Image (cartoon, rainbow, N blue to C red; front, side, top):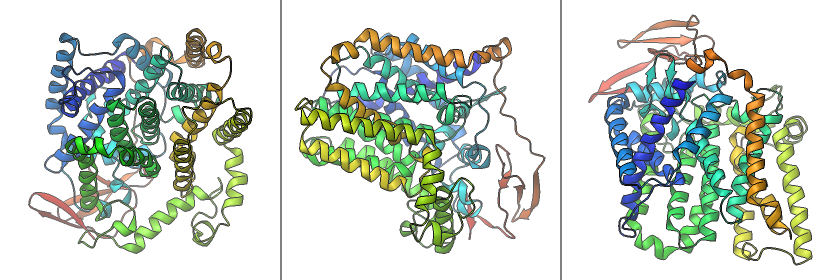
Length: 551
């Protein structure tokens, strides 16, 4: 546990170090003195994601890892000596250690051994590969988070940083919640406080370990990370709405919402927030056109990477796919998309997920899904209850004319309602809770936060002492639930992510490349070429130093 903490902390201070030059680049004309606060670490994640995608076009990311670490540490040291760091490192470290502790014995989730670790390994060990989708369609699911992890992947004994880095954005959110306790009571601070409390409370009452959200931590997955970027994005939007001259929150929103979508495309609905602010702040965009172009360029690089991996600009969205030697065809794209949607729209028994007439081409799936999945999923029921209760409370407050006028204007209300239904629409394409944790948690908490803001005795309910006691109590209950993790062995050793490769067999050599198949769909971190679903033949070529898996 201690080694895991120090490995994660080193990555964190590297991220802090990279946050400074990126923020300085954006605000060099506005501010003489640039300081790094907690929320600004999003800039570091964005900057390193940009670097990882760009450099992987040219070389394996493991080759630049030492330079990244050295530069990050030097930049962090500069921030310390120049007193430009506005982060309480001790508080942040305690939060980080807390999450590593309670999730110490989390095992593998379902997807990580199937394709997450392999996807990371390809970017870590190889420069970008043309037509990787022809090797395994899952390997070309181009999440920016996996490329980011490939850049910062480092193994030391039983410690592998790809299993630990997701604790960093989570700790950033909870440190921001800690800061919110000492700030003015407004919708942004209440919403993020309630969101973090909701997640933590849900983990405490859940009967299986720490619940479906925290149980994914300690894996190189993307669902919890996308959720975190979503929460940061909406929080930043509210902060900018409350403080219109705070350009930092504007750029935090732009960067975090883009990272959210590039991490998990199902969160594309979050983009309505930056689009709205851009339309309403065209003067700012004209002044910051170069910065806006620089940030947006990451999306262009991501689409270029998508094209190389799969021949689709946004994989696996069929209308973005272009003909090439490595494109595996419209029919297979349709099958993969429909199977994914069908699996999420079916009941938990998954008896009819390949019956596309039922799950795709009609609404027959909705009623059995609602009765079996929705009504038996605790997080959906809790979130729905909070939304209904908050809506009723707000209606009563409006009727009594006791509401907060700052947030009660037509544009703001219409935007919130529109964004809610846009997010619902995209989530309903594949309605599984892990694809929508961000908005399934933040919206109920934001609605509840607005209802609470209108309460007459708000100062007592949201007093610093009450919030701090509540926050501390949740942490204490979580520690109590997971006290068994605190053993001598766990303290000085790392949880071993062990893989059993006995079910991986060679299926042959193709153009000098030996390919293996995992009979249980767990290629995991196998170092040679491994697939889950084998083909009879593989068309592999080399051109200009790049590997092509042609159709």
